[in-house]
Length: 295
Image 1 (cartoon, rainbow, N blue to C red):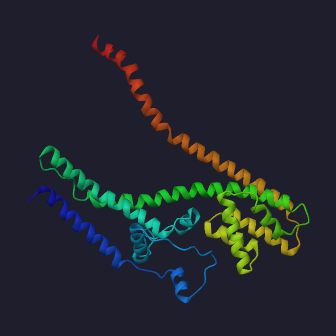
Image 2 (cartoon, rainbow, N blue to C red; image 1 turned 30 degrees about the horizontal axis):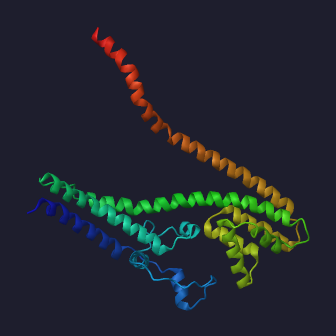
Image 3 (cartoon, rainbow, N blue to C red; image 1 turned 60 degrees about the vertical axis):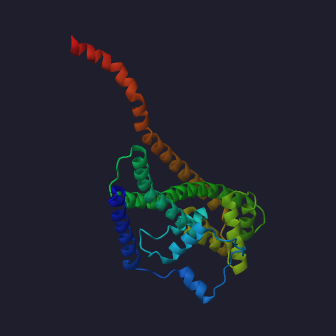
């Protein structure tokens, strides 16, 4: 039998068996969003006519509906919501990465055999292993991007706090101050806040409740604190000094987080710098050592 088939077929069988076991034996849960849709709840977001789904989007949608919702397979919904990535697109990216990882060793094996004319095969477990690594690498990428987006969001919230405090210098209400401060910039952070305020107007809820809900939804504590602070306006409590103090505190937290991130990057660059200098060090010290050993 062809050695390539000997290497490929067992790996395919093992990978397919593991996938089927995970799919059928893992516990499944009901998605709250799907349940509400079946009950006929209306969405408060603006309706946009969807375009035709691509083949990969259909694959991602199928995976989102049929994969069991266990911890290591469930999508990072907060991170995806922050990055505004649909769950179907997230799973489509994971499927692409997994297929690339699965078939790369097989293509390399066939290419090596065609070039050398000799039977060659990679370890049987390499294809499913590489597919699993690339599948979960998409989660790591999304987590990293979401972390950067949260730091940027927090930095903008510090600016937003100061603008709300400035708006409160006049006779405007707390509700109007939140709206006015959110309208001065077209950055993605302020656009997200304005969309949340528009949804609050449709549902006749207060803007501080809306921004607190958004902070919980996106896991951004500074927004939650802002919403709770602005709720004090219902008790006719002066807010300007509290907002300025919160902005100063948030600025210090952002500066500390940026210093920590810079230190992490500096530590991570130590090994590459050493590896770059290592050949130079060898060239410098080896000749004297060689001379000492030969005399």
